[in-house]
Image (cartoon, rainbow, N blue to C red):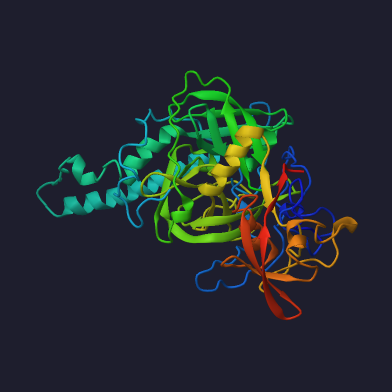
Length: 494
């Protein structure tokens, strides 16, 4: 069994155990050190095996962990060798609710002027083929329309010219086009290469004027120790970068440009994910399959969706209480911003739910594409993690100090009867111990949120800060009890 022990270090529940799978794991507790992706990354292991229970009204059930994939970074091509296979995980503020055109909060223009679009880049054969097919389809449709128009007049062809009125195109600053033009110069394409040559492509965005870039841990993990990182802006300018800090459990990382003196650094405005509502419009920006500067739109499909996803290295898992969106997100979108209708960042695109465990797209085996189920780390949580990483280089995890089962779902998160490797399932003197929790207790609610599994409990705890006081509802011998718990903390990933 794994532990939810939330002591010092990365929660053991934040990583699937190696060897035979135990049937329980820790809610935020210590864990193994984050491992850089291998030269030939294996397929991402399935997250903890638990079946989601249909969500009750007002609550969101857990995503099926065995199919949720962190958006894998798109494999980078190397001149000396063929591209390393990527893992199957992709890279998966409050604005006015509803459609586009609402002004950004606080008025004014939070964005800097847009920069030039990046120059065309050479693509591999698969991508060129895809572009050609798209062009042929468009040409076929256009040809058909032209033939019909000409056929309407036997004596000659008739053409109709557009008015050319820009206002008719709705390119106002608060339109999708206006927001994209302002945001694109602050979004970068990240290329990561490990010391052994493995790596890939992901996305990030300007966090502050000091040159910090916010992205996913799984985008840069391969280059965290002795690798090489570059960040390319929409104007084509490329800068070397270094990892300032990364949090495997949260799947958040901060990198910094090494020579940012010539870079135009316009941080994207950060919104408030707590104020997001289902149905709000969204914009996702990233580099799916290496196609930098791709913009897609959608809505917030659900909030507080428990998601467990692998880092692709075969040893650890990340947990989030995610924003779910139907905006198209694909491998390479990882680390990119999810924006609201006011152009504010409300999440970091991180994982997708795939239709199966394979299939690929565009000739990329092992990488699944969007089926309208994308997941983003809420920016409220990501901002707190980023500040810790910039300040100390280490993530800080809130914890309650118990080990819970990770396979069972539906009835709650049950504290294990015995801990991993002979440890205590309830940390002596820890927050849960002080609150009177015991082995065998089943936690069913954290404040007003229903807890249906171990991963859900971890995701909800990690939405808080150490020192926060929460109310836990639990069952013991068939009777329901409540208790107050002050969250402890663990520093660093182990």
